[in-house]
Length: 196
Image (cartoon, rainbow, N blue to C red; front, side, top):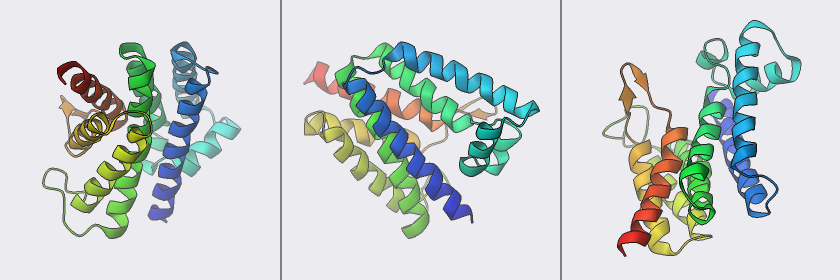
């Protein structure tokens, strides 16, 4: 049952990233739309804690981990949109788009591959696997390579997965990787362009 939830979550993760990239590429949406969508999702999250909003409640129970449903509904989605908004705010579109694709593919493929085929535990996060890290790195590289040269895609995917493979905390709270991955990937692309 848990695997089915994770498969659904990660497929939604990939599809959302692809949809956002397509809409950005065709000029259908921009960072202002992402900002207002983020605010809307935050409001729906708070409302859903007190009231069972029919469609939202069903989506939460279909795609959200049990520990977040009552405590912080929509947590992953909120940080996903905040990460996308920040990367669009700080970087040009030609850097933001591959960073969003790395968020969509690297994290999802790495997680699913690790759950299914993982044998060797990740040295820094006991719930993750080295095989998943490698698969995520390759998936992120391929996704980014569609939009940027291979050295940029390689650096972006490598550093994004490096951050995904460690737990970064502020106080007792872990920083969600949906926030970190696109920012690190975009920074890596920018650094390769700037220094090379």
